[in-house]
Image (cartoon, rainbow, N blue to C red; front, side, top):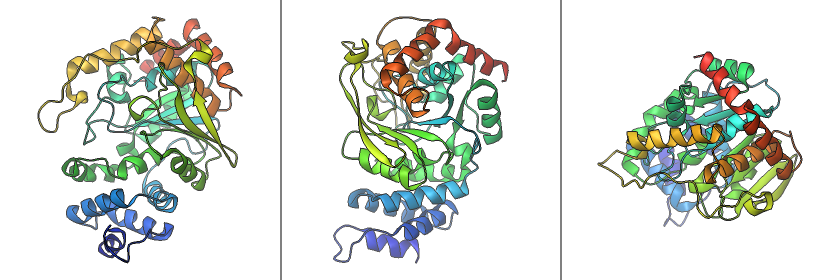
Length: 354
């Protein structure tokens, strides 16, 4: 069945509208990634799916096709955790996933951030901007990413490096403007053996996200409604999530006051107003510098909301890795990693490889 036929099946307003089977979803995304479909048809398909709402089978089929097209690193590496924040980044919140990942790596976890840069429609701040500022860039090479994780316990890889055909879809994403299902699917492009932490936007999406990861064969995973949809928990209020452990889905709530990490305000960057068309926070050099400087301050031991948020993110990572049973144990390990200089040592090792 062609993508045009499947588009008719999922278009709201039709009497015969229906959900796609997993096999149909796989075939649709396989055709899209193979470049067989026009930009107009692809854009219409994504918009129709957004309006209809996606099922576990649809997302699972899309993600399976994407993984089969991709070159995935670290597939035989045990104890790996993948952090998968929104690839189009954040507008106002600093991407503290780098700080959290370095802290968790300093505490013994193996961490791979799957991210990207300059992704429409937001073109926001991502791990790539922070790492560039720290002098330890993100890689586009899966082999290099695997080498970095093996030698330092940390790496960040561009998902468009694992799956270059995503680059051809950026014009579609820019022209559609709104977030389309691709924004969810690309966060699921990661090694099958890894534990996964996915950042989720507000709304009833947590259960679906974790069920999709379960259907893809992951035994450990989390979906977290972090700050601006990131993997970084709030330090001002509770953060909701769902955790997959073996075959069980468990509600997860992060209460910062439980760990002495509550703050009056969230970590923030200077006020940013969107600029001309196709420009975002990631195109603003002052904001990029501010985000990088904030991560440097966290690693240097500076107290404040950014440190608290990074510690909570690291605790989640350590729990997902199975290196602690509770978030309280994870926070203790994260504090030791940060205060002992182990997190900074990971960053210095990474710089030495580049």
